[in-house]
Length: 77
Image (cartoon, rainbow, N blue to C red; front, side, top):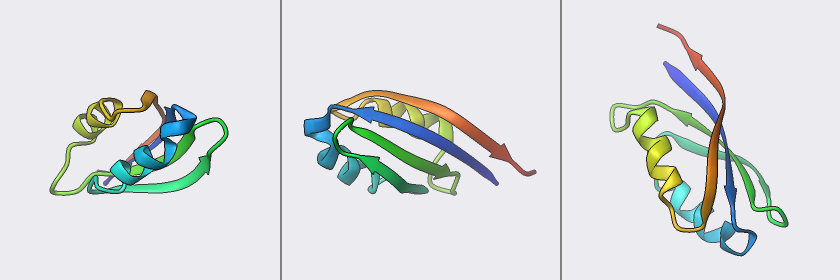
């Protein structure tokens, strides 16, 4: 099991669109949103459908995302 905590910084005016795209990723859950600043806190759990490092790169490619920073990682294997 691999769980990552990530802060996604988006343009405030694109925050809703970014949130919608984030929910389409397997293993991603949104925990907090600051609409005024465009900050979104997510967790990413590895699944059979994803590789966390690939998903992190894909998150950074979403239109409106300014940065995605890995804040925490837990691995139990």
